[in-house]
Length: 129
Image 1 (tube, rainbow, N blue to C red):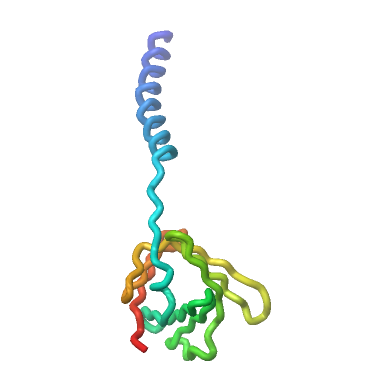
Image 2: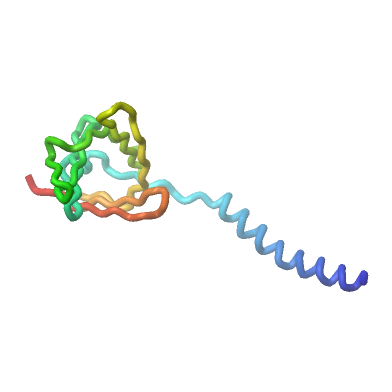
């Protein structure tokens, strides 16, 4: 019985040591933060029928022409960009504010891509004025 216990304890240790090493690496290895040029964000962006307009002063509006909503009827929001963290704070018509956070993966003069907290990706292209 003692031999069985010692053998299982050794197997448990052999499994635990690599697991501890992986966990230590994941918690101690920090991914370098990426910074994006905030001046590239202002403008009008589209993906399918969904539009976002980012104004240079940190405000904007979003609308979906597929829902028969125009830019003038769109939902206002405030935005901030800190490094690679894009935050929208949607201003609700009936009162209240709904924050949404995203991680930017690409921001160029023609392309905007980000992921939400559930790792769903969103990609937009700039609308020429």
